[in-house]
Amino acid sequence: MAQRALIVGGGIGGMSTAISLRKQGIEVDLIDLDPQWRVYGAGITITGATLRAFKALGILDAVMAQAYTGEGIQICDVNGHPLHRVPTPVAAGSDTPGCGGIMRPILHKILSALTLELGTQVRLGLTVDAIDSDAHGVSVKLSNGEAARYDLLVGADGVFSRVRTLLFPDAPRPQYTGQCIWRIVAPRPASIERRHFFLGGPAKVGLTPVSSTEMYMFYLETTPKRVPLPESELPRELHRLLDGYGGILSEIREGLGAHSQVVLRPLEGFLLPRPWQKGRAILIGDAAHPTTPQLASGAGLAVEDGLVLAEEVARASDVETAFDCFMKRRYERCRLVVENSLEIGRLEQLRAPPEAQTRIVKESLEVLAQPV
Image 1: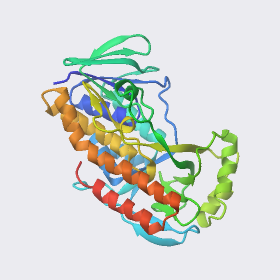
Image 2: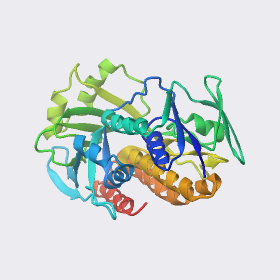
Image 3: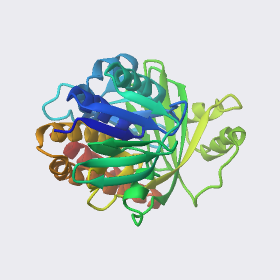
Image 4: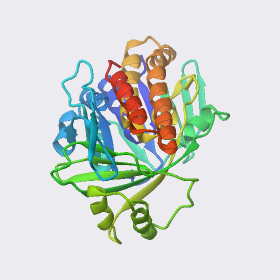
């Protein structure tokens, strides 16, 4: 059985893997390039399957105490008039809610606290510069010149993964999908009892509650890849984009100003062909299957990756077998999320009828509710 692991990347997937491996009694070092171990972005949406994964990880109570959980997605027209509701099925074998939302910094705080509590050795301002795997372990050279050896290495360092480049220098690179996502956090009125999608306008707009008092709005803009805008210009540009939307979206638009913290990101994604492992090093999360947010499953897949990897490492007689079993359990599920998210994004860009977009959402959530 493996005794010592290195995890590269201290995001959701890396911390989930550290927590899961430590619960199996494996010594874990976790390194992250950011010396402050910061988290970026606004809120994230949580599916029922992700809540099930949080429960298995041991953080569900902490998440539910500080987040929103509920069920269903309310589909509306551009003026906020209800059209129909998409169910969010409860994950099979679980008593968790069907969906939710949480602020990224709060989730990071919950995960990092448990990561440290379980004894993971966290080192910041570091990445890997070289990886050499053999039949007995993996040797690494860190970016500070230090050399170390482990039984296995997990690359959880995100969409532009350094580990992926070292393991698979000819791997495909993330591709811009044709959409940018705008996000802003706003006060949550009592009328927003669940997630909302506003369809039929120039872009898909959504609202996700993230606590009892806050929600975040996203706007999926179809556009050639934007030149980065100064932060001071983002509220004015989002105000322009929201022209023509009524109801609560009009209220959010009129509330935009210099005080507003608007986040703008291009959407990029791809599915790394199998295998995701080479010797005793393996990729998980966005390093292997970065997805766009249409199915709200990127974070959930990363947590599941960590849980499944730890289960297989503990069960198998050797690391290579554990990696093979991990791939058998994970590849098709991750493929479904990546490909269906990209397809929904394509339909959004074509301004396809709302029913065509929401059908794929409904069908995908039903599959994701099945056992991992």
